[in-house]
Image (cartoon, rainbow over all chains, first blue to last red; front, side):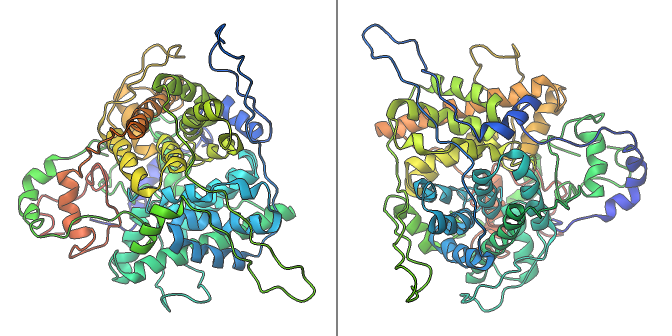
Length: 293
Length: 293
């Protein structure tokens, strides 16, 4: 099993494939929904959406009233990234990684602003622990921070902020925030090269030598929750101040793969617009790909 | 690139490794949080959690009042799986896969019950489209259904239901619900062998021959949203009736891998308690693994 990136793969095979990028359609996949839905997504969050009755009223029934749906966006006020990170660290031990990240931000806003934040049942977000109920998929810290950002902004504003956080998570040596009173005094860092819980933890465990059921692994995930929240709040503060600038660019390795496999590509079977690395998982691609496989 | 499962791998190498299962610790990872947090998770959702003031009040400041947090669980009433699936299909085109799955269930409950469901800002869940903002991670239909289930039940009840849905998603030929008025008359099925958006769509696109930017791919994801909601509501109805029974068992292939790599294993670097297949991604494991690699 090879769990580190094999970026060297493209040094051998990528040149020819990279040439395919010339004239390739811009990689602009942004949603599982079609283009019109993406456009709707940018505006619908901010508007009330009455839900029509689901059936024609029967003579013996009362006429159903349209039910109002709670609207977005909710207001943001500049937060202290360290206070939010400390809150996230503590919340991790109450409900896991997604809850920790979500409550790290939302709890600070609830204390500052009150309604409507006090109406949100934050315990719901405990479902995201360990990649959702232990399935090792999306890291819960990312699931939590993405969710809370969509309370604050529509897709057009939120997605670039989420892109920055997801890309940073995949490439940064993390955790990079040390809690003020950590359970474990020192936690080694690692680069996840992925946004998945399973991958992120496996790379850290292999590098650090700590097993997944160790107190060090649990505290690493708690530090990581705090790190994601600190960075996320910094970006949200930048956005609120009008100074946020998107810097994330799709890595050349991924662009090369998507030039064939992504939107508009001759294969066109990969429904992904962003990724840290393809070869983290696709380790069996030969040096002659795509010619031989 | 090999994107179908290579279950045959274990036929050659699994015998010896399977022997390691004898006496191995039961595979009981359930959370990114430590054991105590898992226990808390089973009860905290149902109780009010006042948030203490974040700082000692200063003489010139008003005394901070603890902010109340919205509590769970929220009430469930038996739903019509077909009505929920139809709602999910339509909602997909308003906000993508996670929104479709979440609104498919929550919208039905909002119409039936009203408060507190009308307070939930459902548009938040649009963040999960295409594996969260196009990153191809967790399928949004699963992200959405897991989230709404945690509104209804604590971890002890919710996790077995989520396990059933996630396992079914990984092994069933989907989509298996045909909307009453679909945009595309027929949609081919495929077995995702994973819970990830990227994997699920790539297998379907490769099998069906439709590219990811085709109307057929979009409608496949809409049908899939409806399929997940139909199955999820069936299980939720069973739970409400007291007849839900968990049938999911961790596949032998995954048990074999986790006997070394999971909790209590000699390697102990994989923080996952459930998975459909390890070899879907780990395609480079040789037939002599673990002896040679």
